[in-house]
Amino acid sequence: MIKKYRPYIIVFYILFAAALVTASFIDLKLDIFLNNPDDAFSIWFEAMGEMPCRLICTFAGVLIFYLAEKPVLRVFGLIADIGGSAYLGYHIADYLFLERHRVIFGVAFGLCIGLMALYIGQFIAVPENLKKAFIILSVAGIIVMFVQLGTIEISKMIWGRVRFRDLIKMGSYEAFTPWYKINGITGNRSFPSGHTAGASMSYLMMLLPFVSPKWAKRRYLCFALPLVFTSVVAYTRLVMGAHYLSDVTVGGAIGFTVTIIAIAILDKKFFQKKNSLNKSDCFYGGEQGIRTLE
Image (cartoon, rainbow, N blue to C red; front, side, top):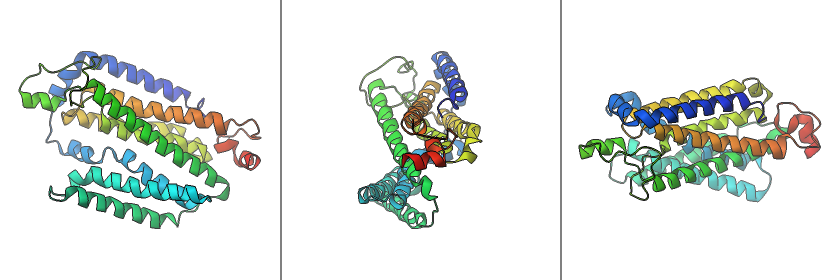
């Protein structure tokens, strides 16, 4: 499967390198030119741009809960759904509720979403021969999310880069530093962009060809749609003054890279199994391959 994505991977990293080199020269100038924190379009994406990351645990947890046969997996799915929904509510609370009891209302709202997803999940019909595949991909999605979050948070702490909007508050651009300068632990968290990395979790769409021949034929969409969405979120972060071009470039690349690593691991462990009889574009080498492995 990873070979099928090779042209798209090459295109992505060419764009990444070009953007990062460009950012080395125009990071500050571009933010000065684009800055418009009152832009309604950008404000909306500030609230909704990270949804691909925020919803992973909820939906993956529901799938695991209903498709798994082992009790331990079902418990894991339930915890992922409830925990992920609380996490979702906590992060969107700032955009939905007034300051008083904001966190409590946000978490409660998120839990309602999780319970609703759990109820709807019982009506999801998955072919018996693909249940194991969906469980594995769901677990992979959760792992990818946590790796991405951890990488972003550690990088933010180490780089300690000042956000553009904080420079505006200071009334001076003197505190600006290029992306390649590591400032250490300063409390500033501009580099890399968490919103863009969260949006880049939409690249998990690239896992769909593992379970569906129909999506295997639309592999280009599994790459193009996340690329466009992530790019839009990245642009709005510049408009809001929250990040620089280098911040969003690296943030998006982290999410994409973690996803590609996951695809490569799944490809090696499952898709290219030696005892798979049919090397089709479907997970485990197709339906016949699934029966063979089981």
